[in-house]
Image (tube, rainbow, N blue to C red; front, side, top):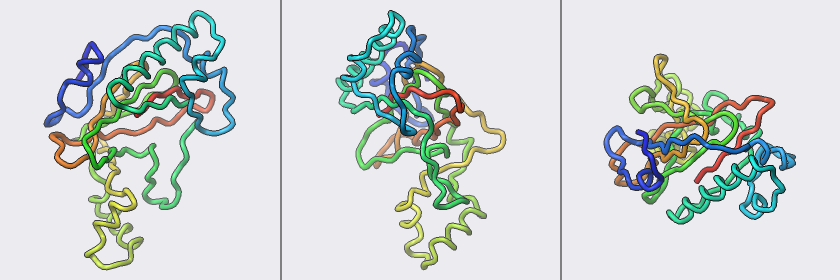
Length: 221
């Protein structure tokens, strides 16, 4: 679902199949200029508002910065805790080769209290979502479940708790004919999470595979 204002983004209730809402925007400014000013010695660096405000930028860079600072303020006033990340790539999970649990895998976010996930890609490859009805929870796929039971090695009683403890139950596999939806650049998204008493299914999403020569600029909370 698409909305035209931040207020509608935060006030439109999730229900039933509606678990992702986008404030669709066409942003102006040069966001790559902000990325270029940060020395990236790690795969991911968090950029603070103070660091962002202190940058010496061209007019186009200043326009981009103003949008970022405004988004920071909007999300904070809503009660969220946004972080602005420059990403080369995320750490890969190779602990269980047959079942990676990193953010490149389709997954849902879980919380013990009612909350939503907000994210916006300003530069670089965009995150992706898939409909709940076009994906299968990985722990329900027979061949994967067999391998998980081998890994667990205990009795059936504690198996479900094991799946939750290691976050296996949060991950999904898109069906062969699934439509993968890119969240696009500049759009601020609100995604439903898995929490007790939720009125809708949590939104299944994943990080994109980054281009080797291009970093991402992402705000998330």
